[in-house]
Amino acid sequence: MEETNYLTYDEIPNEVKDAIAKNKTVGVAFVKKDGSVRHMAFRRYLMGYVPSEKEKTEKQLTMRVTHNQMTVYDTNLYIKAYRELQDVDKAAKQSFRVVTLDRVLGFLVGGKFLDMREKNNISERYGEDVYNEITKGMVRAMEKEAQEAETSANELESEVNEQYLNEDKWNRTRFQRLIEVMSTIDKSFKPKSNEQKNAKILKEEITQVEDENKILLNSFIEFLPPNLPNLIKSIMNKGQLGMDGAFYLLMGRFIDDYERKYSSEEANLINDLMEDDDYEEYFFEEIEKKYGPGVIEW
Image (tube, rainbow, N blue to C red; front, side):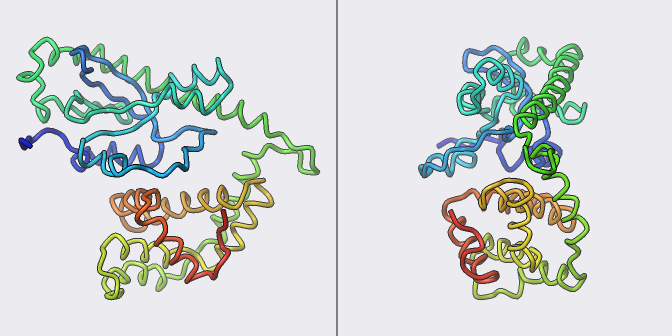
């Protein structure tokens, strides 16, 4: 296969990777298969939608690296479909998109346009007309689209939360309870400084694990608080979530903490490894070694 120097997944700007990891709205402009230019606002995942647990194929697992593609959800399209269908699965299927990175013209993050036209040799491959479609007007349109997507997503989230009003003594929404529980975790999760240092040092100390990805997962597991099982139960009781939902909610929170302590690159990789079939089993085996069997059951 002929090698190219076009944009690859590993070369996506850090601003874009960070926004994707934090599930913030990102804008992208790209060349479609028919040669026309399109832009959209997307997120990595969507409120209320739970991805399929169906076993992934080898092609799916290696798609980003092998085919230089991103799988995302068109936020505005998802919101429109959800309002029409009132079905998160159908809305997700309608808004699922694959972005081929070597056809990207640029990304928009936080109002800043990151130009990828030279990197992808757009002028030579698609012509000056396509290259020149990125104008100040289009960038403003992308920014407006992203802002509308963010606003609409927040509004939809509030509407969905209203559906979870409880009739118990608290009479608060599930979302409000989760916020309350997470705020208590903010106060209770204060790892000792030497424990934080040990989490980083583990990458060098765990010599019996040759796979660097497994070393990183072990570092993250060591970073997790000793009272994780109790936190899971607290989320389940107060947030009205199942065990797996409570577990992954907490993992998202602690990955954010790990990112602030160490680096976005490592935190993003941890998140990806937890979704990878090859490492998921290893991750839960190590979780059970630390906390004992049954900390998470399916």
